[in-house]
Image 1 (cartoon, rainbow, N blue to C red):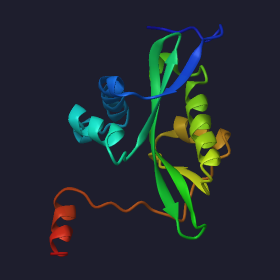
Image 2: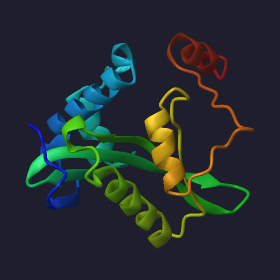
Image 3: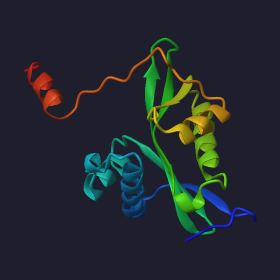
Length: 169
């Protein structure tokens, strides 16, 4: 599907519902392919449903549609700033399908998450971007985002995570 950007499109945002899980997983897989990380995209519908709609809810999703067609999504969750003594929002994924890029879908999604952060009294709104993803970095800079050059992401997963966890026993 190709969307012409020369006319006004109807962009609708809404919170995800359980029935959106297959579409959310499709978006995640498309994003993983774009980021050259498809081998890491192992989420399944059961886990996604439990974590997005169970108790507790670990994350939230906003769905974007253009003229009724699934166009993209934003998945985010709360974190906490001890320095500010307030919650924050971390944007795990922002994805817009190629056919819908340039229409303002990404900006609408990220602006809505920013509005939620303000409404919820959050001190900050953060996310990570791959250093080679220049189009995304330009987009984020155009919104006023600042790169946190002095910080590096650290991660434990897989066997390293399990090995460290057993040391707590």
